[in-house]
Image (cartoon, rainbow, N blue to C red; front, side, top):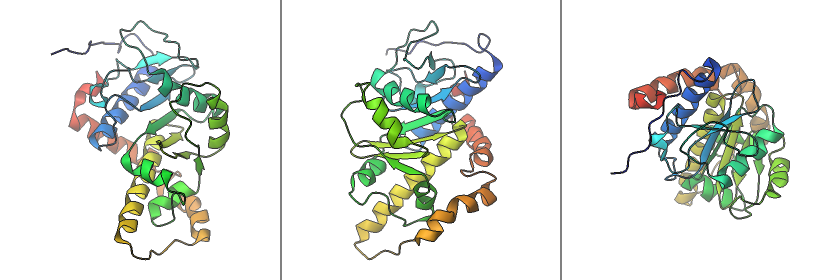
Length: 255
């Protein structure tokens, strides 16, 4: 059996970077545990605080192999900045670099290819206001049409235009993307979008007429969420519990 190289960067990076590495590695493990992974594909990236550098998964590792130390540090051009035996997926980072470049508040970007987000994004009617989860996403949702594998840098401008000021993005034929000022916020936004897509497909599968949530309620959901969650996503409230869950699942992510 071919073992992945084991790295230990805990005492070689700043405390701020190490904390970001811990949170990002935990996010990868949680995504895998929830069944949202795609073998060695798709990506979650996070900005190293107070720098123009970013952390992303090593290309060739499954999400349950990601650790705080084997995350790869790059700049916006995808140039690897530290000594590492790993490479990154250039197609994956094209998408992430576009969002990080355009949005200063995008400290974490999650891009996934789940069955449910691909299915709903590919429906002409898209995401419908059929659940409370959908309301959270619909209040800040953009769309970006499929252009093939993201290796054309010209696509970055169109991606940036389509995300605009939105925090959720559906990519028809492809999947979904969320962003946030913290790993926890981006994770909760993806959680809500994923649940919204799952529920919509379950409702549509019945063939029965569904009750749609009124537009004025969808428009007001963000203000209501701020009251309930002490923040529009609940990321600050839920992430400590999610981090504890990651440690219970497998504490090696923090190595």
